[in-house]
Image 1 (cartoon, rainbow, N blue to C red):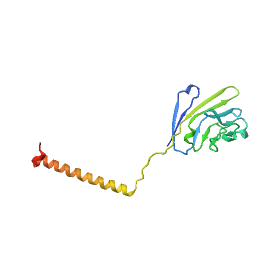
Image 2 (cartoon, rainbow, N blue to C red; image 1 turned 90 degrees about the horizontal axis):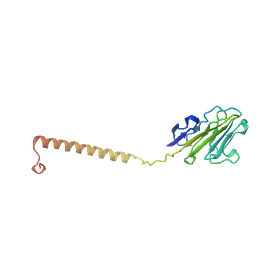
Image 3 (cartoon, one colour; image 1 turned 120 degrees about the horizontal axis):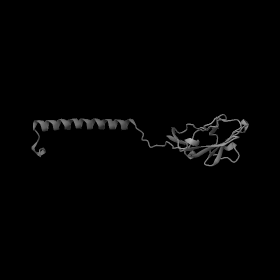
Image 4 (cartoon, helix red, strand yellow; image 1 turned 90 degrees about the vertical axis):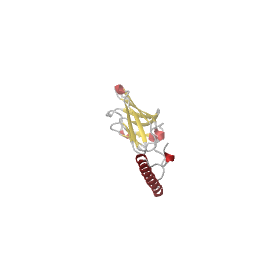
Length: 170
């Protein structure tokens, strides 16, 4: 089980938190929250390390190890949408947990988006159930059921007909 907690901080919606659960290996998309203007510069960071960048020139889009001075931890697992600026992390791992932030620089302003992601691996404890185990518990359940019926019937006869041995009545 993978748990992805996304905290998006776009201005007035600063306290809004979205929680999303995904299974291990499923892609997670971090939305930019804007429609990209061709002249905008969008830069994605993971824990303050550059991981993706897009500007007005589609041929200059870079992700992970393609970017100069970028971290290679996501090698071939990042996909950047050049129209929206959204970032998709494919096959996320627990080591991908942390703070992701997007910086958008337009000709008139600067916008920041934060995504806090917590990825939890599903490596739970499991017991293999074989036919022998099922058979054992089925027989044990039947025996307990029969004993309860016999004890209940004996108790009913004993208390209502007063035919209990003297040693049991006290």
